[in-house]
Image (cartoon, rainbow, N blue to C red):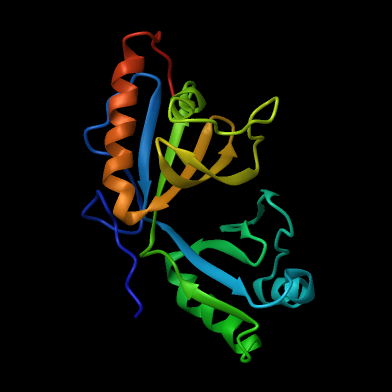
Length: 202
């Protein structure tokens, strides 16, 4: 069954919308219903198909966890040793999935629409990393998760894809069934932090 992409918190799909009810002087949160997602899965070692897949996508795909690869509005994120998540525009989802599936009719690689499954939130501001860290370890690396890197981790007990997208900007992908809980946790954590933090622009 294929479900259409949808917005979890906003009546309008296809654009970034501020998270209603979220209040902070140092952090902003937006639902990114404009991000389309594909789950690209392999039935073989990814090294066997990576170059063919890169030709279809017009960009390379990461072979190891860590740095995501970005070109224009598309991002390739390593998810497991045999799967990636591809970000693209909502309007490109169906066409891109079709291109991948036509290139691999034997299903050695298969692309499926994934926007209905994941809710993406953008979290930005001077204290964004500290807010996320309240929910657990973003990374055990000495300097945290570098810009341009992504990893699967737990934040506030919720399985999430955590991306350090830009300086002070993060993209967090959570299962849609957990999105309301995660948003409520963000609001509560920001409320606690606001009692301790100085005002800063984001």
